[in-house]
Length: 326
Image 1 (spheres, rainbow, N blue to C red):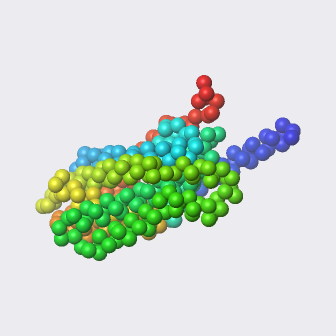
Image 2: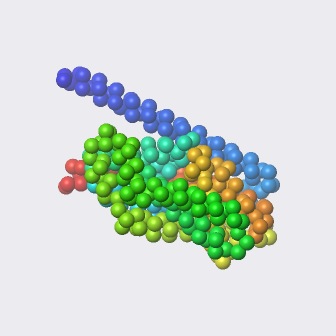
Image 3: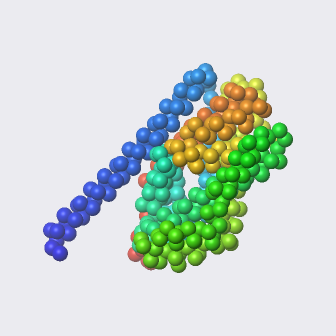
């Protein structure tokens, strides 16, 4: 192959990658814009002005959310390593948080695309990376549903419908993460056609790995509950504000909302999360606190994701195999 032909192929590859990235960025921007518009409308309906909010509490809510996501990132990294891949933790951190922006696009498939694109290298196979994303995501959903169901069952005066919903979602998300079932599903889908080594990779998924994931992610959901608590503190002039004694209810509400929103396949679970959080909080804290907390939670999480993902995307660069051997 001549140098001229190689040069043309290289330029073609560059522009294809550029176009794909531009499309992904446009889709994410569209999803974020829709989320912001909906939040703005709900604030206007309740007569709450943005400049009256206690912003330091929203900053704390953002921090709790980012910390709550971190255990899932660690579990994804361990899953990749168990499947025979060798990403650095910095690469995994970058791909994980940036990839979360894909959930604001209908169908959620863009999460897999972004994460896989950012993590693949000479040390990480594309097919294995995509498979590992499903393992981490389904485990997150299963843990969230079980945490929500357990807490709601222990709380007094909980509506039975929400407990049943949590149990149903736990079964739907949890069964596929059972290692023998997951390995069988991957083989039935004939993923080995794309990667003949996938069978060996999924053999690394075992009960010890999944137990670690459940432990780590459970801690993450506690941080999500703290994020909702901090969010409620930002509401100006509310008569009844949640305290740390209400953390079990707040954790259950946000866990069930996150799972239901994900399984709805709507961009960012928009509307679905609020349909869970509001009726769970309203009996104890009133409609205004319940509605504004749900909306503020979405806004603070979105802002945290955009800010941290932007920092990681530009500040952390992937490492080449040659640099790792030095």
